[in-house]
Image 1 (cartoon, rainbow, N blue to C red):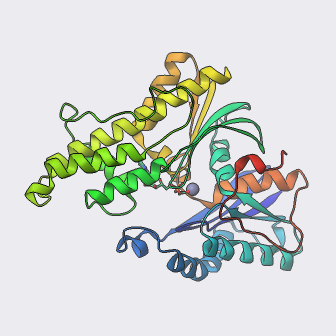
Image 2: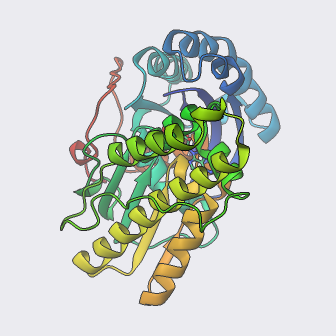
Image 3: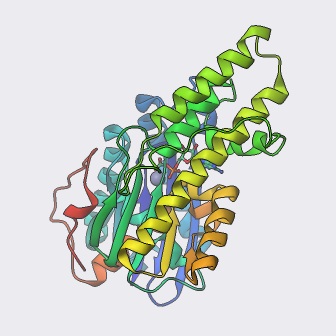
Length: 342
Ligand code: KG4
Ligand code: ZN
């Protein structure tokens, strides 16, 4: 079954063609990072307008790259939530309309299900069941995954998502948006002996996260050491970036280890934008190896938002006969556990 996937939940327009027999056929991504960078974060209205501008040319480009004619497409999958309402509406309206025009079924996909299943696009996909750590700009969740659509939430953040904490810490240091990759890059110059930041919530039982304390600690450290000299001390910024990254990564790894112990599972999936972080990948690799467990992640370009993961997840649902009627619904907030099992 050949599926067109459309992702427009935030600041990237992602389009892909996935075939259940032959795998990923083509994909393209247009990132709005430059558009939003000057504002230090995503401006929802600008995001919607840019999706409107980019979505159809990008769909044409993907069809052309894959040498696919419209009549060959057998279904359309679009991100229906969670995300920015206006941005979601663009992808959903275009996706639903194309499916109607082409006479094929359409399905709305949960953005985090897309992230969670993204490692299945790789050559050695994880088998079910597994524990998934979903780490993005909006989510920090540990999920027990029994199958497609069978998700049990094990832990969630009580305040900021970890990606959001990276973005805010970067903003404090004047590093620009998105903060995750910039902090990671600056941290490479950091001195690990200089600062040790607290690992939030690890001394308490359970699998929930909290990153607001780490954020405040970062701000206080910066104020104490940098603001005095008008932000000129680049080495201190690098040292803070490293201490922040280490604390965030350690916290995630400790909770992942706990989740594996609690569930008795031996496979861990990490997905979402923050799973692109090299330190996190290395840490989880070492942690799972020590337990005789295995970690799976998507290739780097499919860690952050993309159309391929939506085409893949939508394909699983369409193959199982799920589809929307002629209307469509977009959900800015949407719990993973509400999804129907496949
Ligand atoms: O999944 P994603 O592309 O969009 C959402 O669904 O939110 O994730 C974006 C988030 C941003 O907060 C960004 O700073 C973070 O992922 N991120 C990273 C890295 N690359 C992206 N965080 C840490 N290290 C990275 N290398
Ligand atoms: Zn995402």
